[in-house]
Amino acid sequence: QKSSMVASISHSTDSVDEVSKLREQVRQLTAKVTTLTRDYDGLKERVNADKLCFSEHFFSFNIVTATFPDTPYLSESVELNGVNLTLHSEVVSKSDGTKQIAFWFDLLSNANYNATLITKCNIVGYGSSQHNTGPFTQIVRLKDQFSVASTRHFGGPWDTIRSNMQNVAVKFAVKLVRPFNANSIAFDAGENYVTVAMGEVTLQVNAPYVSEWSAFLRAYFTSQMREGQQGVYPIEDCAIDDFREMLDVIYPTSKPINNWNVHKMLDLADRFIMPMLTNLCEVFLNDDHKHTLSEIEMLILADKYNLFLTRTNVLEKLTTTGVLRSKIIKTEGYDNLSYEMKRFVDTRYVELDVQERK
Image (cartoon, rainbow, N blue to C red):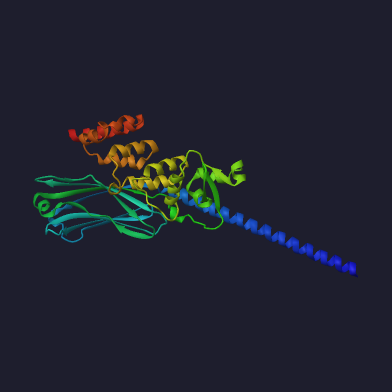
């Protein structure tokens, strides 16, 4: 009887152990499924973001000055990449008592992406005289689940326009850029840190979060290389202060890109394959109010890091052959441009030359 009792207890213990093992296997499988689901959702969102990254629209209309009222006249909408974009027009009274014809945009979106709007405007009046403003460019930032209005484009004194022109032709070319939204990446402050070594200095890095930003570091942190087995990941030829600066920019603290770090951030984004960081830098570069870089300096950066938006914006804002020569072609930096970039400059020069000869 005693032997039977011992056997029963032993069998019961084995059953408990087996249940515990099964529970542990279930826990591990659940964790793997959760990880795979997160990776899949992140990849799907990133693919969609790539598809929705860049779009253009062209507004074109005529205003008959005799019937244009001193109240909101125009409200034309279009949806670009999930952003509802509305163009408004109105004659407004300024502080000095004069009236100006004004145009502006409203942006509205509930999507989990930031957006950058670049507008280029031409306003031409036809009649006994002509009136032409622009082209010019401005940047409008749209935050998550938020609406924003652009600053107003003023097309000139309304009384003068109405007295001398029968029609006003208005043309707006708009470009909307929606980079992948870094704010949608979950920052887990748990035990997901790895040690990165740069020379004699080590730094703790949140591996899952940084891996979402950098394809290079994601592969490095998940590799079976000797470094990973030792728990320390050395990074060669990178100053610790620069790496810390990069973390400050991409971590939820979100340190802004500025004049002093944009060059280094572009360099690290290129080295560690970080397209989202490149996007942040490019949005900064295309906001003239935030930096002091010259046109040739921006074009050199666009050339070095393949910044399509920056290249396009710089060249389109140069509106005469004389300005293009003085700000690009006749500068010392022009010789540092690649053959491909010089071809883009030449193409822009020919476009402007044809316009000036008409």
